[in-house]
Amino acid sequence: MAENNRKDYYEILGVACDADHEILKKAYRKLAKKYHPDRQPEDSRAEERFKELQEAYAVLKDPAKRDRYDADVLGRKNHGGGKGKNASGAGVSEVVEDIFEFLRSRMEDRGKRGEDLRYMVSLTFEEAALGIEKVIRIPKRKNCPACAGRGWKSPGGSRACKVCRGEGEITATKRNKNQVMECPGCDGKGILEKKDCEKCEGKGKMPYRVQRRITVPPGVDNGSRLKVRGEGGAGERGGENGDLYIVIQVKDHPVFTRRNLDVCCDISVHFTQAVLGGKIQVPTLEGLKPLAIPAGIQPGTVLTLKDCGIPGLNGARRGNQQVCVRVEVPRRVSKKEKELLRAWQGMQQGLT
Image 1 (tube, rainbow, N blue to C red):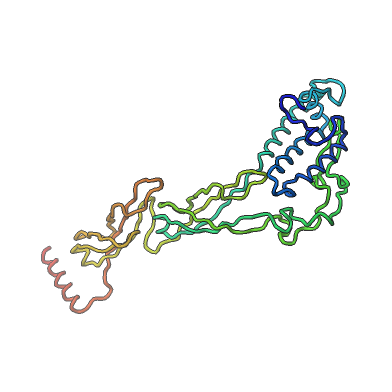
Image 2: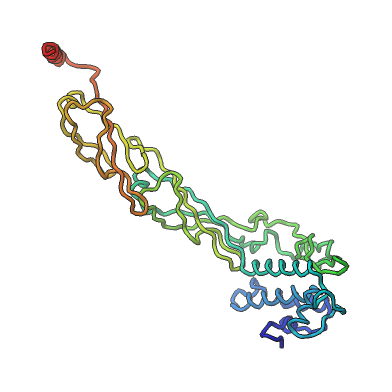
């Protein structure tokens, strides 16, 4: 058994310590096929066993890594012969490469995080100002059921790769050493995926929608983003899901406009109201409210309704409503009204 409680890769693959590369490869392929998570969906340990097989084969198929493993972990002499700059005979550059390879494999073991999704939500002016709960249908993608996410048909009728002759691996010479690597011609699959899946058109993914209820807080504006953690794309190999970013679009309002937290609107009053003053009803976000018009008000004067604006995000103060007064002058008046206006005009001239 391995020292320091380290895994015995030979035992994991079920081979002898002096097994050559062909024996290792056959053992790995046999066990990988048996314990692949797709073939053992009900076995919770299958994925862990499959990762152990990948880890063991990744070390033992590489002569330099295997020498270091034998010497450092199992306490045996290396297979490659003489001692060099380190226990495996590898140079400093090779050690650096192995460190990067180790870090890369660790990142792969953690899985790939799912993609973040972006979803546009259109709101009325009132919904954005006061907040609302909405049900949305988020577009997502899942593995195509017809090809199990491969994007191509069952490999039974596919041709063997001509580069690796169906092995999925090639042997290349690097620094006067033979190294086994994944075949670039078929990405290590050993076959050429020639025919795309007809259902997903070779994409491997199918679109679908999932229904979710979201809460839009009061005070959001055009371009505001709401983050819903974990509702993005699904992670791969156990990686966490991505996030969903909801982007707010606010429709124009026929009466109101927004200025920071203030709501602005124009209100027309009859010229007699402008002269005499009085009270009028003004539309607000929460219905009609009374507004006092002072006597003699001038066109363009802005009156304020306190705390009738937009609530601030995160409990900030609420804005006001700014009402710009427009004086309405009638285009047509009756004969009697003209007489009264002339009399009033004469009185004004007499006073001056």
